[in-house]
Length: 204
Image (cartoon, rainbow, N blue to C red; front, side, top):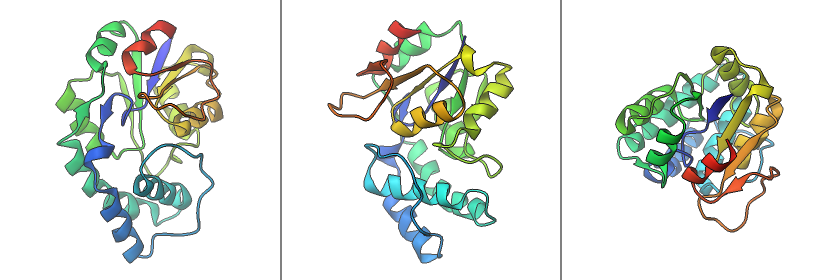
């Protein structure tokens, strides 16, 4: 079995330290805000959701890479101040025997900073990149499985948002564990739902 792990708000809190509202305003000023993409509802902040929806809407276009660079400026600053989610150390210890991949909507540099800052060991990292449609599409998950040399039925994906679950389903990964981070309402379809990261260990 292999583990596919979302990063932000699953392992580490980056979002709360990123000024996604300023990122959105910059995207808007440069004409990158287009018609709304069809994306799952989730609990992220309004600006975070808007920014990520822009990336989904621009996927596959020649404008995507520049929009991603604009956003990553803000993410890098947030990554430097990011904090571990409750239960991170217990989760890392409890999954030390598994091959793991990070599958994240964060850009590559922000992801690298977060993993180094918090000492999170993984085998594969699939951050957002121009040749892969971002979550909730399944492209990033499929790439992670390819790099791990694993089939979808050999994987468990862990994430905090409905976007993560949708990406897992779109990639054919049937087992998803949703981490609510204590929120009382969610739209997860999986029966495997836990309030904090270390409780994921019960289901793997």
